[in-house]
Image 1 (cartoon, rainbow, N blue to C red):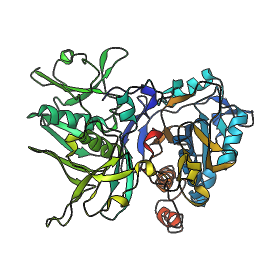
Image 2 (image 1 turned 90 degrees about the vertical axis):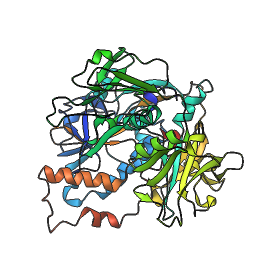
Image 3 (image 1 turned 60 degrees about the vertical axis):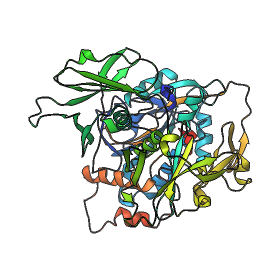
Image 4 (image 1 turned 180 degrees about the horizontal axis):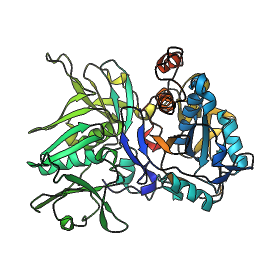
Length: 509
């Protein structure tokens, strides 16, 4: 598994915003100072100050109009959020979208984009200098010009990891596609299996905590503890991780180190080679390290489920890795069914029962896990590919339904003008490029402090609305558990949402 370009993968969390999972919110709770005021240009070519957003709660999203995958999904999701906000706080919630591609996204282009999606909130642009300042305020990592990641010169492994996914069909027959988005804990777990290390971990409100390694357990008095470091390839130094191990994107941070806070951190060595690696510095200043040279079905499975936040129990045995449970569902004691591994046959476009275990699959693009009683034909094709060639003109697949249905067009294709259900080829004399960027959507309070973040496009509108309501309750905009206010669940139960929360076409990242 080779390193993927920094800006081609969505950042799980910004290094400038400290995030910890919190039970109060569905998204990530943030602890950050106000982003302050700034001035940009809206779709009407008028100057707009951020302080013009006078609502008590402000939703801020980032996009660029030439983005044909993640950005349209986020816009459509936010459109549903806008429609579903309870009436009693609707006037107190504002929306604003900020471009990541000022070279192309002029006010006129943004106007066309808004009309195409049927949204009315402000869409802002500006000069590259103006926007660079705004991006930094939100901790957004943006590189305006990035060569298309699918070009023929890209290494096979880069494309392999970038486009890998796992189809998960549960015991009720419902299927989800999970992109390969490994966390720091994924890398730690895989390295521990590779080297035979024993990690003592526990779950907390802040995610997975590493309490001990190979019998070296941190003492109860916290006189020392296990600390996580990430290798900065630009500076060539090891640096403290600003986020927990579950929030580290292992596609971006491929070299991790665990060290005892009382040990000599200078014992950490610069990683050798491009393979992902993990180092350990023990309390007695002894060290250990290992690398992960091969990308197997085990890595893909562990990384896909970890990245989606779905519990998966994979045991290591003398016969290789064995999957015990998914989402805390195990095979019954009578073995009337069990979790079975499937591989995708690209030649005849069908799923097949795997002939070897997950360790025996090298460089897999797509795998599927389903109860062995599931017929192969019942498992969706990778990317929830189209069944009929006429769908999206044969160059994409449809997400959503009814008035919210829209095509996810293949690379090199885009929506036809005024028709989001038809894909046409992009004709341009300019070199094809995209914008590398974080895909994070924020919920800010009245002081313009980011309070909650949502990553990529893998979220449900009703969960986002629930976080807005929770913040409104904390800010005193509505009474908690007021008898006169219908519950969010009741309000949203009548809304048909067909977008899959963690179903994404792998290439969208």
